[in-house]
Every structure is written in C-alpha cells, then in structure tokens.
Amino acid sequence: MHRRPFLLLLALTALGPLAGTATLATAADAPPLMLANGYRPGVTPLADYWVSEKYDGVRGYWDGQKLWTRGGERIAAPAWFTAGWPAVPLDGELWAGRGRFSHTVSTVRQQTPVDAAWREIRFMVFDLPAHGGPFTERIAAYQQLLAQMAVPWVHAVAQRKVASDAALHALLRQTVKAGGEGVMLHRGESLYRAARNDDLLKFKPYDDAEGQVIGHLPGQGKHAGRMGALLVQTQGGLRLKLGTGFTDAQREDPPPVGTWVTYRYRGTTDQGIPRFASFLRVRDDWVPGARQNAR
Figure 1 (cartoon, rainbow, N blue to C red):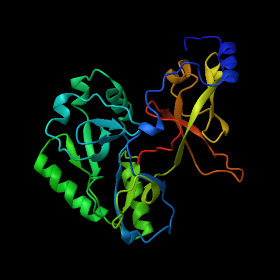
Figure 2: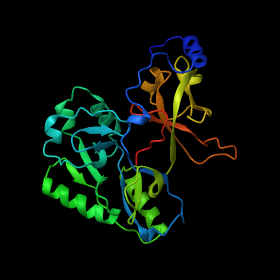
Figure 3: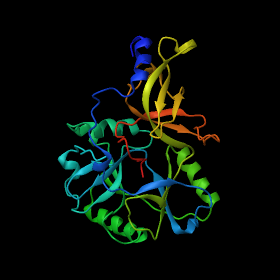
Figure 4: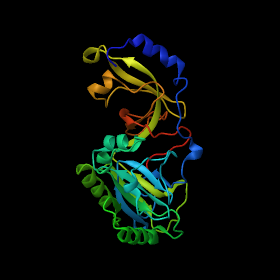
C-alpha cells in the first residue's frame, strides 16, 4: 500500500464496493457444474463413495470446444493446450501442483496466454458431465477417454474406496501432510446434476467461505502504518474482521475494497459467527450471487 493514508481507506468502508468495478461474468453465465457439500461423519455409508484428492487449483469446464471457469469466464489457454481434446464436456481442475495455487490463478487469468506458465499446468479430469450414467461408470469412461487422448498434461483423477471414517481421516491427514488441500467423496450411484447436494462431498481440515472487502483497518504495534485487518462482508450480510493469515507484502498492499476473498475458519459460534477466521486468498474468479466453492 506504500503507506497510503488510512483515513481514506477507512472512509471507503462506508461506501461499500467501489463504483464502476467491472464484473466479467455473472452467476447466470456459470456452466452447469456439480457442487459439493461439506463432509459430516455418519452422513452416509462410506462404502457408497469414491474418494479422490481435492486439488487446490482453478475449476475448469471444457464444453467440447472451449474452456471456462466455474464462474463463466472464457479461459484463454494456448491452442496447443486444448488441441486434440474431445467434443464432449470434461469437468476438472487446472492445477500446477501442491502449494502452487497462486501460479495457477495468475496463469489462467492472463487473456494473452504465456506458454512457459501454461507448460506447468495440468488439467485434472474427474468427471464427464454429459455421460448420462452413474459416477462409477463415468470413472471408467473418463479414464478410457483420457488414455486414448494420450495428452501428457491431461490427467485422469484417481479414485479409491475407504473402509471407515477412521480410514478416511487417516487419508485426509496423509494428503494434507503431503501438501494437499483435502479429499473429495463422490457417490458411486449418483448422476451428474448441476446442483449442490450430498452426492459430492468435500473434506478438509478447516472450513472456508467467501466475503467481500468493505474496508481496511489500521495496524498497531509491529503492523503500525500498514493494514492490521480486513473488514469483509459475506453474501448473507455478516460482517467480520480478518486479522491473520497475511504476508507482509499483503499488509503493505492489501486487497482493494470490492475484492472477494476466501477466509478459513473452524466452526461457528451459537450465533453463526465463524470462529478463528483468517485470510486465505484473493478470489479473482468469484462470481457474486452463487456459492461456488471448488467442487
């Protein structure tokens, strides 16, 4: 922020989102994606589900001709990246590897693709939306299709079964320890439906949600002269402060008012307020009006 006056920043809090902020896509433009609920122990027999890693990237939807974000923005991938892809929809995650979310986002956002950056991106396919059969059949179908494509940067996401809740927790710990974000559970008998339900579940060691920045609060002590916390507002109108999770660079130049960010937390109070909320990342791909967590 280069020591910009905090009085101006605090004044912006009362104004709400910045006037004239461009919205590149709306909820109505979003592709019809299957969305996940959070996993709860005992929610259903685990034997009914396939389990895979939850990749920390950018959701990508190939409609048979073009590649889109989950928010409905066209992804300007290099022509070579999608050359030879099938004329059927593919649902997956654009991913640069564990712990490289920022690289993925910066690469995907570029309207003029940078070949060197895209060479590090993989498309992790986990579903065939137009297949018509249950997920167990779709697994075999996308694995066969991608094997026939033989494109090195397009991968079929591996699926496995777990025997118990304890085994699922052990797999989660193993995945997170290795740098992964969490795991996904997909009901084997489910059809592909553009809705959020228990056919698809995400399991992470923390909860997360989105909020829009409505102000910057000045820091104190070691953070004097720069941002101390973000004031954000959720889509439901709840306001909360995010005072942790930032790098020094982010405190010097925080996300502008009007930006959507993701914060993590651990449960809620009896009043529904997130506990131990902290900043996670900027959500440049967020489309207001729809709850669109990855998968």
